Image 1 (cartoon, rainbow over the protein chains, first blue to last red):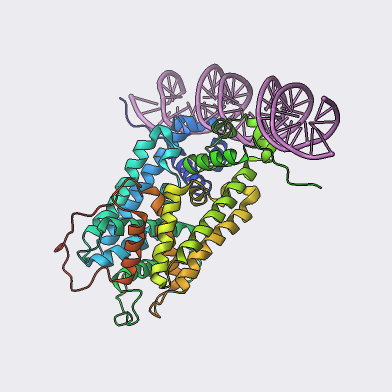
Image 2 (cartoon, each protein chain N blue to C red):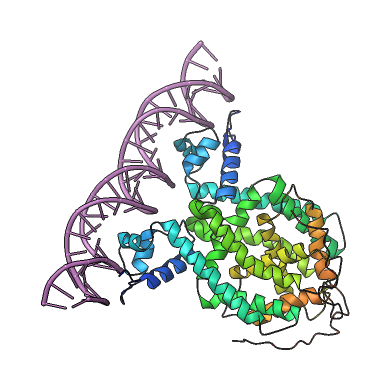
Length: 208
Length: 208
DNA sequence: CGGTTAAACAAACATTTGTTAGGTTAATAG
DNA sequence: CTATTAACCTAACAAATGTTTGTTTAACCG
């Protein structure tokens, strides 16, 4: 019988982790199969037993990363009902993902689909899947009628994606604080002098 | 006397333009010297008459791009006195630069300094030079005391940089409209607590 | 135990890559 | 007109890269 055999000493996970870390920190083209092999304790040719090509390896990382972040997002936003609070939680979760949890998420942020011609469409799809989570959150926001939700979404998406270039987990701010700050910029009028009227918000969940 | 000799048939500019376009659209590592040579009507080896290495060629593009955007920014923000209006103009200018003017600006956005080891520090410096323009604008904003200006700056910077991935010059929105929308998100409260969710879903306005 | 085969190794191959060395042409100065 | 040399060409090199092929090891099942 043909069962899904998988021996105990299978190093596929280790391989995927190594690839994710290298792709996240060095980019796709800057990372060689030899780099990945070395980090995962294998030889370059051995990788091809698990994945038929370098691009397929990236695709696997991408898929895993999207699955991780989507699940984390859904878990996080389930902890609140208020739309603005949910958005703040989503942003916090995103920052946490790219700074502490793993390197998979950073790969999605960093490696552009065009860099992987053979799987470009699939990568774009996966990206959309993740971005659609944010879109749904924005849709539920109670905003003024004049507000263009699509523009708002793109603004938030850009701000959130950019955190990977500056957020320092050793810095003074936690991901939750950044998420709250970003949402507060949108809730309260930043530019008004009497904006401090209501400046207290409830604390949500994770702080580290 | 030793004058700066430069013959009329010098194709240095053409070379730099070709490199900028390719770096902007394909990235640094994805672009080969042969690509650049082909686009600029030269042979690969000929490039080395103008620049000693591929990384130096990128540096030249970077420097030109920063000079362009800084000058464009200073020209733009000089047209208004109100800090918020100036910020809106800066955002518009940025979007215009990366979508219409040239490819130089997109290179700065896209190519990370770490990808160019020999000139990493210099590229980081050049990036800072451009980002400091935005910083100065944020500093001048009349914001509530509770607002973290640094976070605000990073949020705006992320949103603006991200426009290159979605802004469509053939779409319904102009760069100026996007700039105004972004600043208005911050001036006027996007969402108020007494507004009801999903009550007012605006349909008409879409980007790209 | 013994056969099967998952999983990895060892060693190369074919290309692509950035780069270089030496020769050629033509624009310019005197 | 002539000498100079900016600007480019031609042809190749050495290293790095993704990948392939044949071989070996050892985990699992009956």
